[in-house]
Structures are given as C-alpha cells and as structure tokens.
Image (cartoon, rainbow, N blue to C red; front, side, top):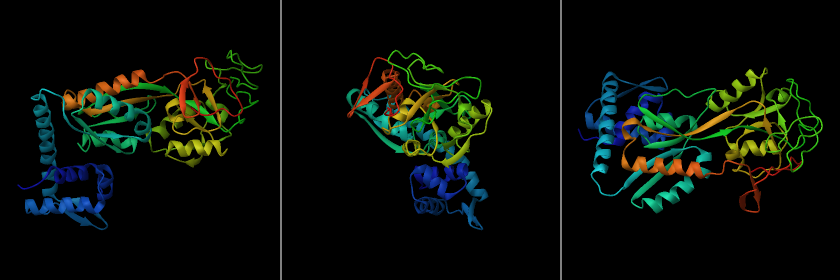
Length: 357
C-alpha cells in the first residue's frame, strides 16, 4: 500500500481522540490537513475509512481494522529508527519534543544549549501543547518524548507503554494581592502572620513565618477570597480543589485561567489568589505577596517517552541532559535584580511590594 506514516498516525489519533479537530490540535495540523491525510489514506487503500454521522465522523469497520494495524506499523517503524541509531558511531538524529509553556520558557532552553555542545548531531524540534495532552502525544507517537507534570493528589494514569521519569519536585506557595493577608488570623487553628519579618526570618508578633521568612498561612485562610484556577477538569485544577477540600472548604473560583502569566497578572491586579511555584513565578515579574503554606502541595516535573524508546541513543542523551539540567537548577529562593536572577543566600523579608521571582 502506498501510504505514509503521517496518514497512519492521523487515523490512529482519530481512534484516540474522536474528532478531526482534536487530532489536528494533537498533531499540530489544521483540521483540513487531517482530513486530507485521511482522504489520501482512503485513496491508497481503496476503502472508505470514515463515515459521517450528523456533524461528527466515525470509523467504518475497515477504518477500525486499519487503525489497529496502523498502531503496530508505527511502533515497528519507531523500533526500526532506534535500531538504526544504535548502528551509528555517534549520537545523531531528529527528536520531536512536546512541552508545556513553563517548560518551554525555563527548562528546555538551557537543555538545548547543552545538547548542541555535547551532541551536535542531534536536532530537536519542539511543540508547545496543553500539559494534560503530553502523555497521549507520546503514546500516540506524535512526539518522541515530552516534558509533563504529575500531581501526587491527582496522579495521571500510567500507560504501561510509557516510561515516566521524575526530573524535579516543586512545592506550591500562595500568591495573593499585596497586603491581602496582613493581620489575618488563621481560621483553621493556625495563625497567619501580621506585620513583617526581618532579615533573620523570625516570625512577626502574632503569627508564624516560614523557613524563608515568608508569612505562613493555611489554605483555609482563603475560604472567603476569590480564586484564579485552571478548569476543574484539568489535573492542576483537580489537584488544587482536592487540597482545598482536604483543608475543609470549597474554593470560590472567580476566574478560570490556564495561562500562568495571566494568572499572575490577575493576582497582581487584586482580583483573586492562586497557588504558585518558584518556577511559575519566574515567568512574569509581578508585585504581590508570596506566602508559604502549612499544607504540603507539590507538583512533579517529569519526562515521558515510550518504553521501547527509552534506550534509543538520541532519547537517552536528551533525557540525561534534562535530568542534569534539572539538578543544576536553583532550588532555593531567588531575587530578581534588573534583568538578572541571583541567589540571595539569605531569607528575603516579607514586604508590601515583594517582586515575584
């Protein structure tokens, strides 16, 4: 049969996602481009693969049969690429990488610099995508590996065909408009800090400060405040809702926002609160208060690849670089001065206009 890998992948993704639009988004095509791939595949096989049902499409019996074999063909093709790479004396080839916005801004750039220095024969092509889509993108073969997120409270289901490796862990803090929590007493039996802590990081007179000198509060102290969160259907949104419910309240979500920079801008504008990590804070310098939480809320940054491709030389090389890069990333608090990030080496005081890092 005279078909292409792109045509087969479009068919396989259609079985996973159900709509032409969703397939286009996953593969980085236009909906028209996906339709053209399927039409070309029907011409190559001489068989109708899709039928229209109202405004939707569904696979015919022939389409479902071919999709099953197409998945095997694509897997065999990927295994062949790995085998060919192993015959070379140097690490070279092209990798397709999926990543979410924070990773695109903060994690991948330094890793790519190291790849160019250590493995000049490796070409990396990256694509920004919804963080909840990266696992399916790897499983479906539209990317070779991806940077993703996992939340202990709402773990992403593990596909046995995927290998997930943790790169680093981040603990969430609470971002609030400047002065919002000043003078508040903890409603959960723990008291928040009023006043300011000094350079020593000692607590204010009526509350506690964290190890870094930040005011320390409970999630329950926000029960009467508006929140800025992603959709409750996202893993991130579900993780925050789970933590809040465990703290004994249902957050009032006033603004449903996925973009981190937009969330920080809204907090700075005084319209709500949100949880943040140090990596998220680096995306947009902002004037607001960052408070440590009594509760432990974490997210894990992970790299995902297909199990059989884990030892593919190019994949293994990039994973090693990403893991080394994550280990070198500053884990302590940082302070922004001009255009440079520098580790202060000491606790930063809680101030009314603390720049986000």
